[in-house]
Every structure is written in C-alpha cells, then in structure tokens.
Image (cartoon, rainbow over all chains, first blue to last red; front, side, top):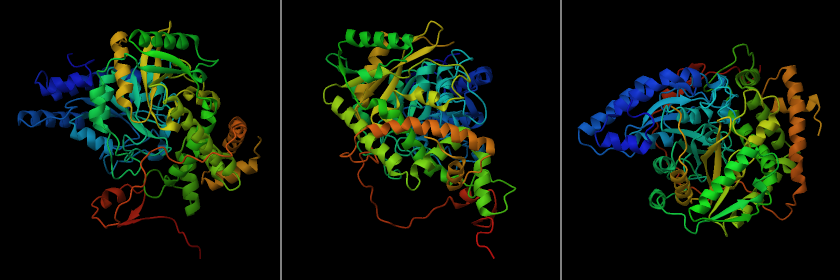
Length: 484
Length: 96
C-alpha cells in the first residue's frame, strides 16, 4: 500500500505529480474499506463504481494535460445528510430510506470541481441528532480505537472513517458539536467553520441557524485545504456569507505563534470533566506556551446556560424543518392510512426514531401558543448574551482553548437511557454554534486505556486562518499516533 | 415541571406524530425532566436583551424575482411514494 495514511494534500500532490494515479488511490482506499469496515461500520453506502469512474476521469484529465483541482484524486467520505446527485441519502433514518438525491449539495459541487473522489456515505445519528451515532436507525458505528466504545456523533461515521484510514478527508455537519466531538473521540481533526462560511444548500436541515458543514481530517493543513474548497458564497443559501476569504486562510497557515493571546475560559473547566481529559488539555496549553503563546484566564459568564438555550432552539428549528417529511413528496409513506391526516401521523410516527420524535415533540411544545415567549423567545435572548460573551473575550484574546468534550469515548448503551446525560457531551461545543464562530478539535493525547482526547480551539468569526495555524503548529510539536 | 398525558397527546397531534402509549408515557417523563432543566433560563435577566435569530452576518439576500427554467421536475416527481403523471398523489383532502 502506498497511498493509505497520506494526507489529502499529499495525495493531491502525488496525483498531480504523476507519482500514482487517482485510480490507484481510490482502489487502495476502497480495498481498506472492504477489509476493515465490517468491524467499524462507518459507511451506510460505499460508492465503489462511482468512485472508480470519478478517479479514472481525473486520470484522463491529467493525461489530456488539463489543470487538476486542489483535491485531485483525494478519496472523500460524505456524511449521509449531504446530497450527492444520484446517490441514496438517508440521514440514517427509515423515513428517507430509498431517497435518491435529485441534485448535488453546494459543497459536493465544489468538491467535484476540485477533482475529489467520493468513496461513500457515512453513518450518523438519525437526522444528526445525537452524540454517539447510536441513534442511527440502521446500525451502530464502532470507535476504531476500541470497538466497545462509541465514535461520538452525530458525524460518527465520518470521524471513524478518517480515524480508520478509509480516507484522509470526510465531510460532517455540526449543529451543537457533531463534527468536533466525534473527531475528539476518534483522534481526528474536526473543524466547524464560521456560520455562513460554507453553504448549507443540499445539507438536510436540522436546525438552520446552527447547522454548518465542515471537514474531518487527520491534519489541520488538510482541514484548511478542504475548507478553502468547500467554503464560499452561494447565492442559493441566503445565510452564506460573502466575507469568506480562502486566500487569507492559506496565507496565515504557516504563521508562528509568538505573541498569540490564548484565553482559558474558566467556565469550561468545571467539575465533572474527566481528570485525564483535563490533564491532557492543560498539557496542550503548555505546548502552546512553549511555542510562544501567552495564556490568560477569561470569563464567558453565560456558558452554563448554553445547553438549555440549545435544547430549546435546536428542537424548535428541527420541529419546523422536519415537518417536510410527511410521506407525500418523498420518503416513506404509511400504507394503512385512510385519511390524509393519518398519512402524516403514521408516516412520521413509524418513520422517525425515538430521539427525533423526542426533539420534534420538545420543539413543537416550545413553539406552541402560550409557551413561545417563555421558551423559544427566551432562549433566543440568552443566545444574544452567549454571543456577546464571545465578542467581549475576543476583544482581548485571539483564541480560546478548552476541552472538546468532557470525557473520552464512552461505551455503547452508557448514555442512551438518559437523554440529558447524552446532551452533556456537547457542553463545550454548543456555545460556538450559538455564537456562530469558528472552532476546531485537535487530538492532544490518549487516555491510559488508549482512547483519544481532543483539545478545542475557538476563534472569532472568519478567523479560521489563525485558528488552523495554531492547530498546525501544535501538531508539528505533538504528532498524534495513527492506527494501522 | 410535570406534563400530563393530555399535554403530550396535544403536542403529538400538533406535530403530526402518531405515538404508542409507551411512547406517550416515556416522552411525558423525559420531556418533563428536560423542561425542568431548561427552566434555569428564567434566572437570566433578559429584560433589556434583543433576541438573536441569525448569526450569519449576511444581511438581506435580495434578488429580482425572475422566472428561470428548471429541468429537474421529473427527478423530483420520481421520488414520490405515489404519483399520477406530473402530480403527487394524496388521499382525499376535501370531505363529501
């Protein structure tokens, strides 16, 4: 094997430079999936034929002497809530089984133009609701570091695919931590870009004011490379921003950290953090200080309210977004229904899993007449305060450093009975979704039991260059072990 | 906060979800706990705070409302559980 374990940047350079072909890279990665995915179960579907055809097209383009894109020949896995035209997109839900995407998501269009190769669709918590991928209606995905443990979620399949060496790059989506938390639990780099940096067109909506697509990779340089491909203004997503500037990100990537001001938010180092996680994150801070960064304590006083704020806003938006799954235009329709009303109620009652129904119920309640002001509107006001906390912090520091998740990977079934304990997995990631800023999880160590730990860096809106430069400098100082 | 079964049934009706009686009792209990937990927000003084509805920073995405050709209709119709020609087929909507 020659291309397995290479970064996306190195594969693209190898293909462009004629060291190996895109087809060879695709074949090797697909062979690894065939050999090892029976144990990991990262993929809902593997796109062998399509991937090989795409790879051969890249090779043909090279043969003709045409300019190749920045991700030429790079095998990419895509979370199964992002549309690839002609490919089944399920959201790991029974209600969408058999749904063949009628168009490409904006990020898929951009990856195609960059000559990437799609090798498969990855498992997720149904409709991206969850933190362990146990809510998939199809099967559980294992943590490649130890198959008794969850990979995190909701982008658990994408994080596991990268950690297992099935691809150097996978797309995830992050509504409350769904890229960063599984990346932390699987020992990968997971980037949630600034809200508006990446178009959401073709991402099946969960909570529209929070959802953001981003890359899961093995290196921060690959995260930057991928972000520069998938980011950019899309006139068909009215929340996508014209401010995104890929050139600036790549320019900043090699910057050193001398004088970088890192804030340590005291509200993120609370009782209940796993001691090994806290020790690894504090050790990571020492590495940044060694690299020239200056650390200081800061306060984001409304942090303790972030989970409650999120669990009102996200379910409310979900209850509205998921109203479209009604058994009429696509997806599963209940057969025994006599009336139109029954078609809706039965199709949805039978098609959605327990966590999705729980959140639709919660959101419907929070938006219902008489409760809207007390719940949804209140949460939106607290959201303003959480956002303001970040604005004030970024007036005096460049980045914030926190744990990504309060614990390393947990065992299957450990948190499924108590939704509130599962919700706490995202306590450190949720605030950045509420505020819309950029954040990345970078692997920073292993527990004694051999499970990965992630450190989270948080930056102001559109400061991904500075964010990933710090992450890359940390990686050079502290290379993270890979699975064979 | 305790929710009654009637509350749960009313919400399920609004959400167009058919729930089993086991689901009704499970959600009654779990939603009660979640609502208790989120009630902590009432401790935050938001009397002078405006709500945040979007963090996109993109302000207003206006365009001319011009008709454009769309060629994907057949692909979209073909996804329907039931169709007739170029129509989605549904159960009778109007009684009588």
